[in-house]
Amino acid sequence: MSVSASAPAGIAPVEKRVAAIEAALGERGFAAAEVADLAHKATEEWLPRNGARVIAHAWSDPAFRARLLANGRAAVMELGLTMPPHHRHLVVLENTPRVHNVICCTLCSCTAYTIIGLPPDWYKDLEYRARVVRQSRTVLREMGLDLPPEVEIRVWDTTADTRYMVLPEQPEHSIGWPEEKLAGLVTRDGMIGVARL
Ligand code: FE
Image 1 (cartoon, rainbow, N blue to C red):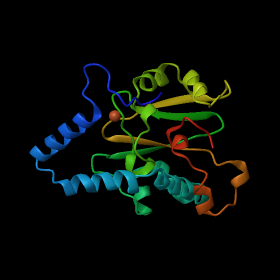
Image 2 (image 1 turned 45 degrees about the horizontal axis):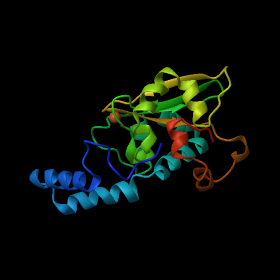
Image 3 (image 1 turned 90 degrees about the vertical axis):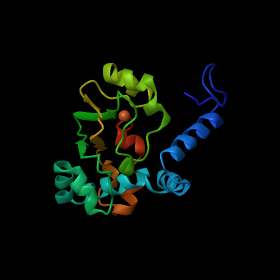
Image 4 (image 1 turned 180 degrees about the horizontal axis):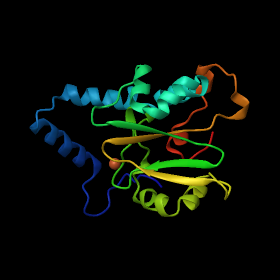
């Protein structure tokens, strides 16, 4: 999937759409500084490295892992991470040798973006949203993750107030590594569930 520079017929070019959004924000009282602040957060703060820290800590500290699985939102806050108030629940899904979890948002593009980062383009694509639910094994295989038939795949559909994060299995060879090095293994795709680490 690729993003085309030229808009399809009937859709305004991206510059016009950006100008329209800026005008609408201005009409609603959003100052340019607030927009710039959001842009800064989106590019500098809401990054998958946040979730990678969480996963690495969970692999290293069984008590934290238990708290993370029991109440994800409270557990990530222990690490100084924040979630917007409307992300009322962070449900952390533990992969095991027999169960593989994958997340989507069939309605639009919701993720726990302050923790795992903003969604990639393919996550917002209608094709992924529709097919991962009905043909999850095939879609994962097409994305490079060929799971053995005995592994059960569970697909989780995000809602406005319930966000998900996959807790991948720790690679065998990384047992005993320091957390910082472990965090370097964790990818956004791993936390969405379309890749294994
Ligand atoms: Fe959504």
